[in-house]
Length: 168
Image 1 (cartoon, rainbow, N blue to C red):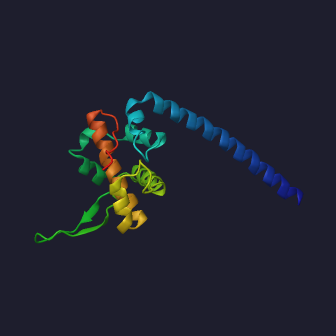
Image 2: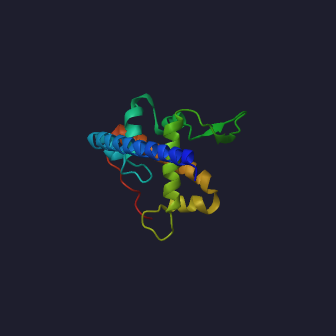
Image 3: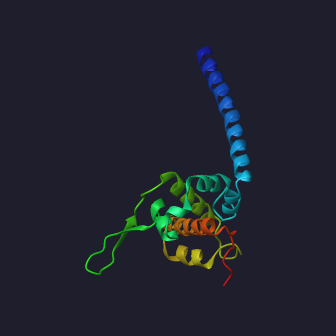
C-alpha cells in the first residue's frame, strides 16, 4: 500500500475516533436531559418511542396549541389529505405537513414495533395484527405512528402514564 494511502487512512481513522467520542458525549448529555424531564420519561414508556424520541417530543411540542389528538397528528403530517366534494369523502395520501423530524421519529419507532409484532407475543396488539394482515407494512407503520402521536398528545395533556390496551 502506498505511503500516501496509509497516511490518509490513519487520518480518517483518527477523525472517526474523534467523532465517536463526541457522539458518546452528546448521547450521555441527551440521556441526562431525558432523565431530568418527567414528560420525556413518561413518553418513553410507549412502545416505539425511545429516550431520544421522547425528549424530542417533550421539548418541541406544546400540546396546548392543539384542540385534539387528531389536530396534533395532522400537524405532524400523519393523516390522509382530504379531497372531498359534494358530500363525498375522498382520502388521499399522507399529507407530510408539519415537523418532518418528529414524524420521522414516530414512523421509525412504529417500524421497529411492527418488526417485532408476532401473533404469539403478549405485547402485540390485535389491532396491529389485523392491520398487518391486509395492509402493506409501510402503510401500517404510518397508521401506527398516527396512533402513537395521538397517545403522545393524550399523555401530554392529561399527565398520565402509558397504559397498554388490555388483551382482547
